[in-house]
Length: 461
Figure 1 (tube, rainbow, N blue to C red):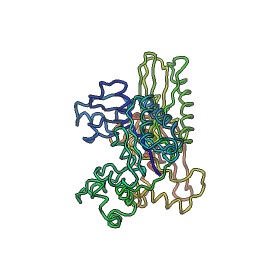
Figure 2 (figure 1 turned 45 degrees about the vertical axis):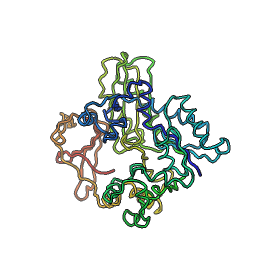
Figure 3 (figure 1 turned 180 degrees about the vertical axis):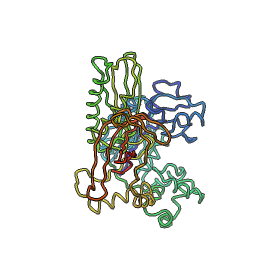
Figure 4 (figure 1 turned 120 degrees about the horizontal axis):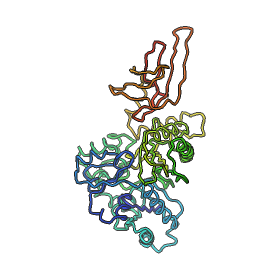
């Protein structure tokens, strides 16, 4: 099988340069509006270690001349979809693992085009004609080689069958797909810095040194990649918005609209099989001023009720001086700094009972991703014990202030209150539980025992 890889490297940066060509000369850093963290940095900054997820102030300390720009993620999503739709005119089954990255098979296309050079040239010409974006296209005998070749293409590159290892030999080890840092560290100690030097090691020695779960990295360095084409769309940021027919100055009607958006968001997440890790709420007023606020979703979920609690709390924290005309809700299925990774689906949702085979498969996947020690640590970890708190209550006994790590927080909203009574025949347990939002945006659960002692509930549910 021959694989075609089409890449628009650093798609968000290229889109912003297309909008303003003068940005091509600047050390550009794109920031998420909700938390001022790096979405993407220009290559010159990426090469000195500025990576997605870093705070703006950290970048300013390391590189004071950086030019910051607010990212427009919805535009980047549209450009990605546009690229995929154009490539879809050439072939049906397309795999997309990241923004601006696509794979497809050339098996059927070889019967239509005169040569692979002709095919790759026609794809680039079509993309450039409709988007004016600088994509590159490469064709090779497997996905890894095609991916590496597309990063080197100008604008096309064809790797003949059987020449994969020769092409890869001079490339640095960083071209490997998500290599463990420990693997790179130990290879560097051995003085191995290129894929060719890594490939020269005996395969058996690599397995004994690093374990069978990392043997596929050696296979890739040798020009062998048995991964099949898997038509898949990377989990994009889900963006839902509502333009209001009439401006709203009262928060209650806005809460009702936000509730409907959250319900739709929950459906989208469940359909895609992912959980939200972060929610971002944006509002725009009559004067076109926007506000953004975000919160982590812990634990990640696609359930409607928890997402509604978080989004409702975010809205209550915004202080709009003018009536609202637009509400936008974003969900991030993955942490923004997890580039080229996917959320692990531990079990199929439709299965009620988990067989031993599925559990073993999941544990193997976790070991590959996080290492042996992660499984051992999780196996010995006990649920955390409740932490004692200093809580101030009103005249009815309802908590309104509390202290965590010597910081005082105001209770902004109480979502639930319930009472637990058990073990009445021995040592009785009587607790009043409160699920509350506090002033820093967190959703926490605290309880009071029969001795009026307050605790932060840290049990794992």
